Amino acid sequence: MNTNTTSTDRLRTLPRAEVHVHLEGCFEAAMLEQWATRFGEPLPRPRERLFQFEGLADFLHFLDWACGLVRTREELAESAYAFSQRLAASGTGYADLIFNPTHWSHWHGRLPAMVDALDAGFRAAEQDGLPPVGLCVSLLRTQSADAAAELVDGLLQMKHPRVVALSIDGNEAAAGRTGPRFAEAFRRAGAAGLRRTVHAGESSGPEGVRDAIELLGADRIDHGVRAVEDAAVVQLLADRQIPLGICPSSNLALGVCPSMAEHPIEPLRRAGVPVSVNTDDPALLGTCLEHEYAMCADTFGWTDAELRAVARTSIDASFANDDVKASLREALACW
Ligand code: ADE
Ligand code: ZN
Image (cartoon, rainbow, N blue to C red; front, top):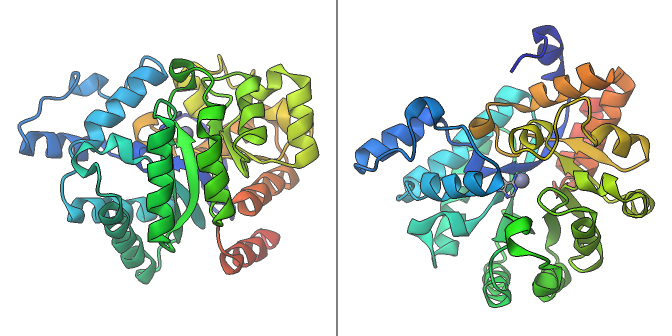
């Protein structure tokens, strides 16, 4: 991380929400090493290269290994609590946190127990004055329509107040066009009152973003940056005011964008698409939210008014309840 510390410190005070961040991307190296040692599991590569990834497929594979180390309810609750501490340290007032049950091999078939354990961690965190969190439970792009139906059945049976949305992430380049496969699951989730957030336009092009809108009814799109390749898709996002949860460092690390100067967040924002700034997988990518804002401000010369507008989008685009949104908007008005 090498943005100037004054702007990073100042941006830590900017009231905002984070709407695109994965629990799977929040493991610190020391924690993973400790868990791996306990189970006598070798690290998948040498310690000094543990967080060096060769693109999205390698990255997702690593998530399976890391999440496979988490075995107990206490460890899950600790991960949730640690996530809320991370938010507080970044000055973030609320997060929609994506978690994808497929990565957590020890917990397969036990979604209610997982949600319950995470909820315990978030409740403890809120009692200690840490920021609130909503859960977006995620499908993986390479899953089947039956698996998607089963996940939605589970969520609708649970009706857990911590769960705010159905999500889908993973590798669209590996899965091919899957919008039609998941349309019914997303339709049912939406009809039952869950919000919908969809990874698209990262490992897919603008056609993936269009499918996210037209087939999956996305309330929000995670990444979406490759929409910039098709003016009609950019217009669709702007006309319908569908927000993008953009993660600059992730796009650089996973080879989606060659440099910050060429990052599509600026042309998309200028075209009237609602954009927010996020971390995706902060621990694994060595970033934090204030650094992502500072990088954008430094690269594109964002004024305070522009920073405030992006922060405002993050709050509006979040699935937080009305009270949380109102208090964040009030704080933002005073910034
Ligand atoms: N899961 C965690 N990070 C991801 C990303 N950047 N794209 C797709 N799936 C993910
Ligand atoms: Zn993501």
